[in-house]
Amino acid sequence: MKVPTIKLLLFSLFASFLSLGAQTVPMQAPGKPSGTQSAELNSLVASLRGVHEPVLQTRQERYTLHPGDTMEIDFPFVPAFNQVSIVQPDGYIALHNLGEVRVQGKTVPETIEAIKAAYSKILENPVISIDLKDFERPYFIASGEVSHPGKYELRGATSVAEAVAIAGGTSDVGKRSQVLVFHRLSDSSVQVKQVNLKRLLDGKNLREDVYLQPGDLLFVPKSLTAMAIKALMPHTTTGLYVPLH
Image 1 (cartoon, rainbow, N blue to C red):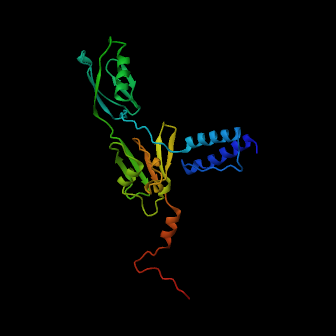
Image 2: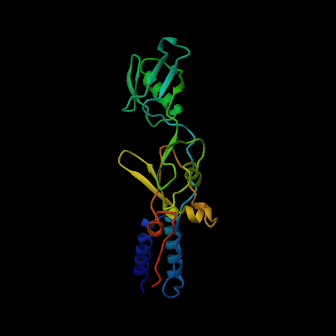
Image 3: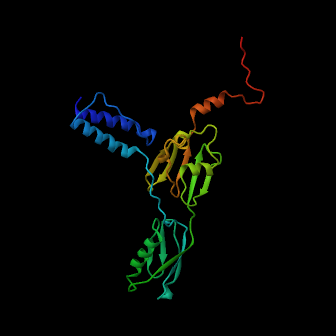
């Protein structure tokens, strides 16, 4: 088998597992390639594993502004410009004597720089500080087959396993091996990650436990096997009677 054909076969096999989640799939090539072929195959497998294996995420510690947030903007050397602004639904704030500046998605330091840049048109080297008076508490949403679906406050670093526990655990028909985490990247794109919570809790793959970000949706799908077993169970406490003849 030629090297390009082997590469195409391996890529197709890994691509087929993409819909099943980020898991490491052991690969065995037909035959034992040697020399250049072996090196190229090892490089290909390593690169593909790097794409599909879940990794611990770097968590964003700084809060970013959302519509409805209220901030007090203070000009210590020009008190006449002191003001209170509310982030509008379109992400902009209205500034006195200046107009509007978009701040949605920015951290407080980034917002200070944006406002300073705006006021530099009418003030020389403006000094500005911001105090958030009211802001959206970080949250995540637990949905699907959890005991208590709903919206929960995201207090500090929270992993998928911890989030499921906060929501009361999975239901009897929850498929713990395919827990999905939806994270909105933009208005038109959403990132989806799959976590094998069953294997995670069994202690076999701790690297699969990822941390939630503000606004994430955690979804536990139904297990077809559990649903089938539940359908066979009696609906009363009298037991299931099966005639033997």
